[in-house]
Image (cartoon, rainbow, N blue to C red; front, side):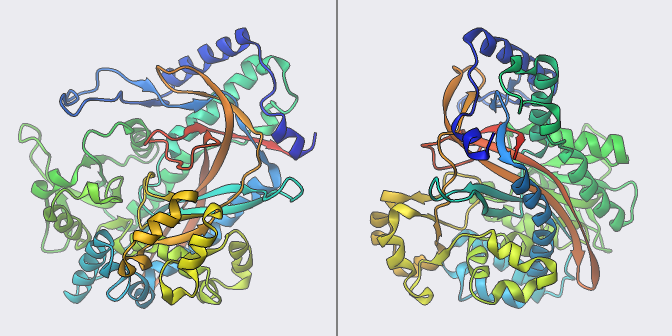
Length: 500
């Protein structure tokens, strides 16, 4: 069966009785294997101090077809991307030019606050930290017309709080269980174990954190998870925490920015010390080896200037930062756009390191300021072919298609450089899926799937780069939905079915 015919005929037909049986098996597997969220809560009624219930995360009942060659390409590209973004984070002059004073930080308050904190630390002579990146590079399959070959194009590169690694591993395990236990009732020869790649993302991400912890050199130090208050996606984080403890003997401390504002301190030797939240616990502060941010990627995470001050305090220590302020800034959409300009990528990556393959994974991007030629005019003229993006992560921030002209028309000229126009990637059409959310009706609809590849990189000034590819995820959404975040309700978790 050709790839194209697989797309147009997926998924194979299932009877209602078969779908009900698969749903029962899948949901009970999910509840048994921490493929979970905490349930929604009302702002008027805060969640209890300890969870009392959980719901399964949204998922697809069958894995999604991805060409074997393109899946292998995405995995191999991650090593080049790890290297690229490590080098960008170490190039202070480049980041200052693109994201600093006179650039994005003068327009975008959030970016400006992050860059100003980084600049202040440098001006004060604080030695730069050791950087750890737990990255995710996101791709869509691209097929402009049905006569074109299917290729792989990057959506974005995430340098902070790249989530759903653990839950995606659980979804891949669920699909493997369904294949091996039911053979999906023989509906397709493609649904075989050999076509389901193994996913060890939890192990891969934990190895990155362990490598950073070991580089810090204090074996009984803790890894600090900086988390959002009332986090619903806690199981994705806890599975990684358990892996660190069970496989590497590394303990984790979890606190929010608000909590760290009262518990974090810096010793004379620049060690980061964090005290327990409750005085009823052992009140001895613990030393932190790695600061891992699962918060801090959105302005909402900084409820007051005190939270930005806390972020700077953490980075003023000699704990490994995951990510550092510089590495977070390197993940900005403006950096992604500037890299596509002639010669810029090649400043950081040589031909032998895969520069051409990386560049070939991009679609066209433009800045919305006049300094980038006809960017703004082209965005309006080709509105149905573009998406425009701000310097934000987390989903729900982009402007699409027919909404672009009116948005660009009212956008003040000085704010335009903070927005990037990107050619729309056009995935293969006619692909279907059965989507299941907890407490919701099972939906059969046409879908688009996004492949994410995880990697980690440990690096610093004068230090040899260590990096690895670390697993993958798939997120699937209805074809008529533009945004792609699972946490904000647009997508479901999925896994890979390799096809020729």
